[in-house]
Amino acid sequence: MILAKNLTLSYDNKKNIIEDANFMIKEKEFIFISGSSGSGKSTLLKSFYGELPVKKGNLFVNKHDLAKKDYSKLLSLRKELGIVFQDYKLIQEYTIEENIMLPLKIHKYAEDVSKAQVKKLLKHVKLSHKIGAYPEELSGGEQQRVAVARALAHNPSVILADEPTGNLDDYSSDMIWTLLKNANEHLGITVVIVTHRIPTNLGIKYRRFNIEEGVVYEAS
Amino acid sequence: MKLLKSFFSFSFPLAIMLLMFSIYLLVTKVVDNYKENIINDYAIVVIANTPLSTINTLAGITVKSIEPLSRTKIIKSVQQNLSDTSIELLQKKLPYFYKIYLAEFPTSLKLEKIRKELMTISNVKKIETFSNDHNKLYSLLILVQNIIFILFCAVLVLSILLLSKQIKIWFFEHKERISIIQLHGGSLLYSSIPIIKIIIASSIFSSLLSGAILILTISSIHLVVEPEIMVLIPDILRMEMEIFQIFILSLIIPFITFLGLLVKYKLK
Image (cartoon, rainbow over all chains, first blue to last red; front, top):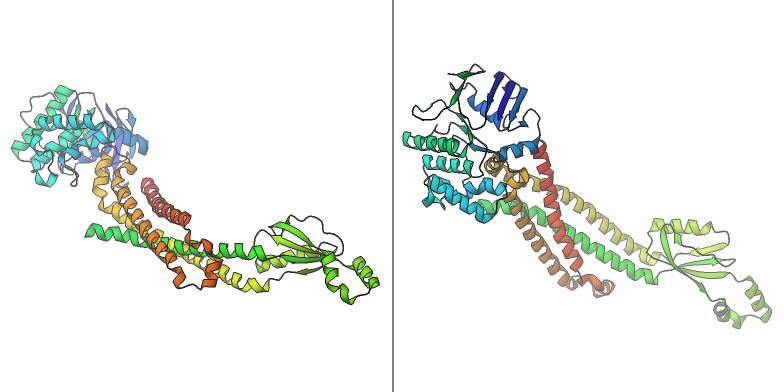
């Protein structure tokens, strides 16, 4: 599903952030990428959805070769992914319903199918009563649940989450972990999470990659 | 207020460019009408020793018709003062007279070219172009038309610069939304839909504004233009095609500017 061969990443060809990384993430796996601040966790995740180009080596995500800089193929890869960010990245001018509907619109789902899917997801993230609200009217935890619902809307094969609980309290964090765990366990979605705080009582089998001084290795 | 300000920042340069285009269309229409009027009355007279053969074009202008002037009429007009022998001699020696009608009114340069072309025909003796009457006003109209066209081009370039600047501002304002949509696999075009909507609204507003000003101008043109000139331009009030052209231009120019920027961003 995700395969890195001698992967090297850097910003603007400056110092390498990730150097010569080799790893494979299989389908339906639950993965944590951890490391200290500035170690390159988010950089690595960015390369998975093509936000950062591959400097050297190969990176395959869902069989898309990210070393080839092809804009249209990049967009088609992103359609197969669900992405959750630390700062939620909800569109402020859109209602909660419109935000969750965004990937469905990009996938050209029919209006009635989209609306039904949004209702189902809002029920799942326990925010049905906020359907017409705008992001600014929601708490941080609620906004992140909307972001998870949006990431799940189009049944992606992979969910990439960058510090999804970084800005949340323990209660909201637990809800997000449960949602991501369920997505993996019940929907068979591969989940890759960048975090510096791995929950202790997740109750799921997972693998962890650690990054130290640009080196990616699997931690026990 | 901010939205209104950015809306007008786009609409006004576009409306000014469209108004300039309207003026150009108006002047072109006046010139065309004037040309049509004068060309019906205008002919070049050619005197030749032998009958003139068919001429299709002169200096690139299509020859509408060549009408021979009746020789008997010319002899009749002078025969009272002449003896029979002189009339007989005149009949033998009198050259052939022709009126050449052209499909369009020639400029001074073309007229000179026509004269030269006619002079190359061996049997042509004399050419009379009678151009002086119309030529001054016609040249003035052509000059005005050319000046307005140059001004229109300058305003067009300036407008495109201002429009592209405003579109860039809109792209900047919608930067976050665009990047979120693109992160979900939406194309740059799809993520720019809100900008396209503002462009369409501004373009329609600008074309309505300039169309209204044009209609107002032509409906009150008789107040400023002399009646004898109005006779020369009877079709001036029929501007449906010109208003349609303004509408099309009001959409085409912003969209070309927008697409240009889109390609630039895509290449980035």
